[in-house]
Amino acid sequence: MDMLLTRRQTGVSLLAAATIMGLGRYGGAAHAQDSAAFTLPDLPYPIDALEPVINAETMELHHGKHHQGYVNGLNKAIEADSALQGLSLGQILVQAGTQSDAVRNNAGGHWNHSLYWRLMAPEGQRGEVSPELAQAIDSAFGSMEAFREAFEAAGASRFGSGWVWLIVDMAGQLQITSTPNQDNPLMDVAEIRGMPVLGNDVWEHAYYLTYRNRRGEYLSKWWDVVNWTAVSENYAKAL
Image 1 (tube, rainbow, N blue to C red):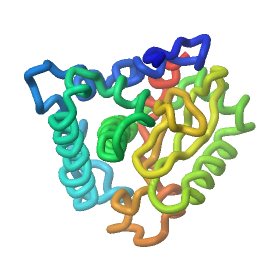
Image 2: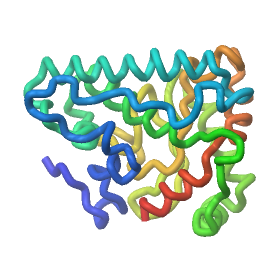
Image 3: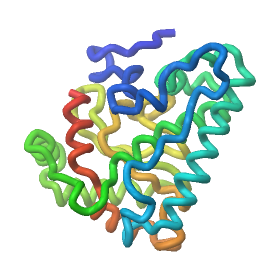
Image 4: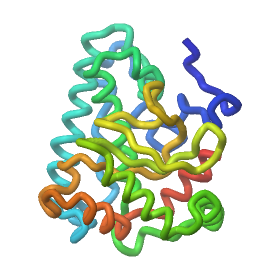
């Protein structure tokens, strides 16, 4: 199995994505003797910092219960399979199609959420879209407004639970895609593969306490907390 997909093959090194995206300390290789390889990252801001878009109770449950559950489930699955011990999170993700549902879902859930927290920021810390990313968005979608509308539509149309993504695809171009459950575009099972630049969680646990069944409202309001500095950095690293 080709464990490292080169830039020529995919436009991005997917195996290196966990560390390139700044998630290395949450997705690094485990020591062979260390069964608890992965840990829950701290939130990069106070739990109520994203209110009123995302309230403190949602953050407490989402981060402290749901994300922690994915970490616990992944560590448990690794303990039960010696072939996984010592692998990085990136190595697990790029061969997700060969893994059990427990490994695939929990590895994806851990990586996705570790990125998600960093894609948001409190007021005054969100920055601006870089000129390079703004130009790429205009080229791919026509305008920032058109991009936002397409991104929201992709998130709203994802049946059941899943994620919506802005990625740099295998041709080095921006593209909007979505994945079911806890899959992501790094995985060998993804319909469209590439480097995630921006991603939003459209599982109900991400928004239900505030928005109930109004996923579209959550997707629209979410732009108010997006950390464009982090998104722009992700885009620069993906090139």
